[in-house]
Length: 280
Image (cartoon, rainbow, N blue to C red; front, side, top):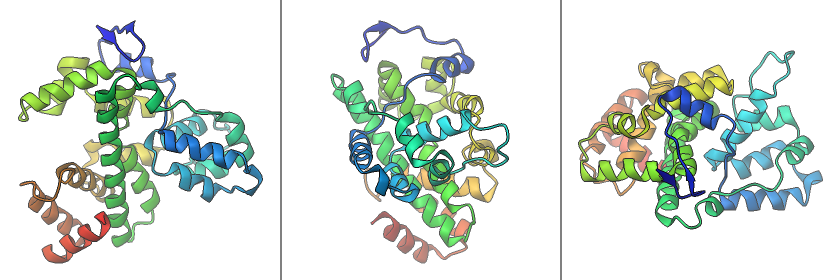
């Protein structure tokens, strides 16, 4: 099979470990608007602090992933705390070292320039992730969770393996999307295993371990801990973002609202009002 991103033969790994080995050293492209913002900040580096820089990165899951991965894999053996958020990672790394480490960035728009359908697929995942992160943060703030910023980042990064698939194997990502379009009853895990020989959640957890990402971030993004309030916070935000991606009339939305109301210990109507406010 050919991967049109580079017109090279794509040898599909036989399992999740194979995908981890393939992607753990792969270049991660970012959004063109993020790359442009970083270059503008680079031109006035002396006036930039961690929070200003973080605000330019915060809505780009791929750049957040790239930064957290770099800081986690280059951590000092003397360091006893993890950088669990983008801001913490920038404080730990430093502004000047950041700009030295991250030069002009490759973009998803350049990588998929000749593949409009794949770029649209990736952009849809990115939009969904940003909405999920916004919902997750709102839920966490309402719950007065001290890890609200980590929860926001966990929702933003929850589907990063799917993003990497669109970037590095767009034909396979399209095949999965088309199969599910033809038969909406197909479970994502089954289609992924049929096409990729692995489920993306397995690949993602393997990459997070290989990159030594913070344990709290790994736990919150792991659906196997779905009963934990922080994980449920993230999963419900993602569910709602998926079900409302084309509007609020999806038949699954009332169940989502009720489950979120239970999480937040609110009534159904106040919860719906909160969700509309967060989405606006």
